Image (cartoon, rainbow, N blue to C red; front, side, top):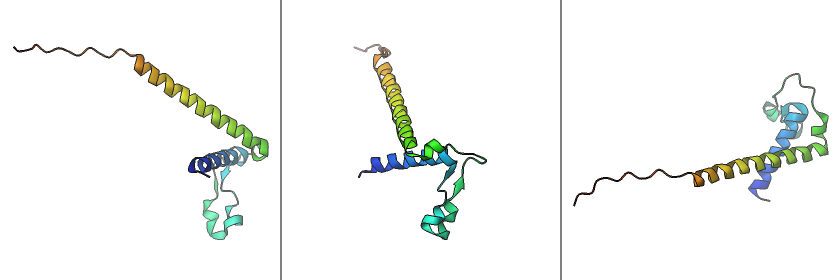
Length: 99
């Protein structure tokens, strides 16, 4: 597995946890021990949660939204490159030649 795949999984998991329960690293101390309790953080206080994001279909939804966002960014970048390529460059100023 590559680094890109790892980053994609971390992004999907992070989005799902924030949208699903409003926390990051919730109950990390159960998995890693009491010394890692400092990792647990609540990002959205008094958040009831969005159960669908915690269930398997939520992963597909987040993946779809991330891919849609990537396509939007790529299209904007291509439009900017095309606009720069179509822009007429300013004519260089000619200095009087000395003969």
